Image (tube, rainbow, N blue to C red; front, side, top):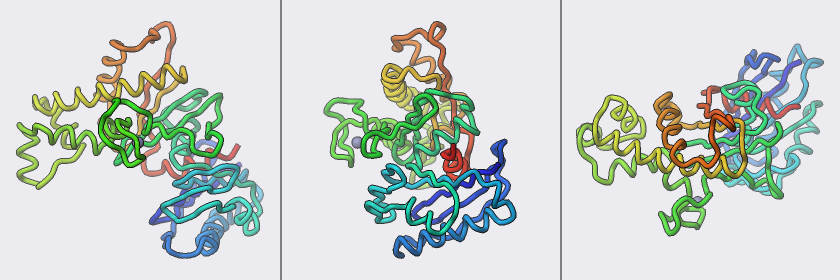
Length: 305
Ligand SMILES: [Zn+2]
């Protein structure tokens, strides 16, 4: 059987067919043109799904859809990016295509995609932090995504980390996002910038999270100091999640996860200092997301049970 994954973003709608082994056997996309009506956008989704299903109609197990917003029972309660509110996506789309439909928040999809096809294959209880411009999250409990009462759960980037800390657009102060995002890493590096990072800023006009990580790996003293400081915040956040959920897997995704092994190594070192539960007695793993550019499609497809 095949699963179809549809990733609806602000700029494009990506659609793919995923086989039993997690291989994408067909891929197509179209621009979202998000100022259009929801009916026009959904009609384009249906058209992509029909192209994807062509020739294998009887072997389609279902359609999964990832949406950048709050989703509950196939109703998009809120999606600021696409200006959708209380949109019954499941009902509208099922009038256009004859398959079972599953939908969820795109960050949640990323987590279940990794647990079905990616880095944390086979995980049953997992939490994910996506360290990008902001910090996204996902919670998998007993193999199922936890979405909460209104589809709003797993906004882990807005858990408090520093009381009275930096102000966050969510209205609170000191959220994980303000200390653990790629944006935060750059801000931390900018504070007393010197060494190689200062040279890079002079040359390029700015520095990126990748610059900080690369220079830390290369051994620049200041970059190492910044990266270690950043990891202390991240370890504190991950420790809280471990204590709350007792996961078998903690997944780290987003741009910062491209740091690779150094991120896991440093994180484990910090966790060893602060974690209440001994890792040897209570095993759990920390993985970096592996689905890369196809995470959207694979994650959406993984929603199909
Ligand atoms: Zn916040």
